[in-house]
Amino acid sequence: MLKKIAWVFILAGLIIIGKAGFDIYQTKAEQDKAMEVAKNIVFADEDGEYEQLLEDFDPGQGDVVGILTIPRLESDLPIVEGTDEDDLARGVGHYQGTGFPTDGRQIVLSGHRDTVFRNLGELEIGDIFEVQMSYGTFRYEIEETFIVDADDTTVIDFTIDDELLTVSTCYPFGFIGNAPQRYILNAKPLN
Image (cartoon, rainbow, N blue to C red; front, side, top):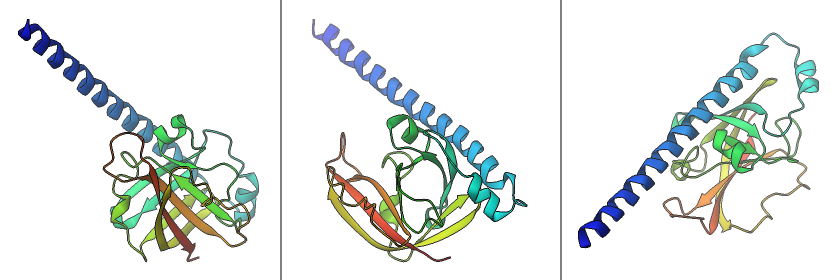
């Protein structure tokens, strides 16, 4: 009887490991596809007029809109419009209703701590984010980091009149399950 119970536990463990491995593979494949789309968008019309490219920019839910580059982490990540689970499985999510570069408002980008933002905790004040869009590349310098409760939505401020890039992920980084907090990085534009 004990042998049967042991085999059940071994089989259950293998199924769980297999499912986790498949999920990681599938997420990586979705991010790779989104990155190809992002590269095509960002580099497709380098000779286009800035004003026209900006005027034509009108993304919908789930659209790939650009690339977030984090030089210190040697990381290029696709940016997807929206922050639901399907969007975050494909890359960094842009919180709908917040700004984009050149809007002069807060830009909010979010991602999972165990996929796209796995090493986000290594960044320091003064490190750089680059946001590449079809209409240009924009650099932001990290000026502050802080931690808030998971249900604290005050970090998203639609009244901000100056451009501010806010990047968020779940915290603590090594937490298993739904993390109780969010790690926030605010960065000011350098352009």
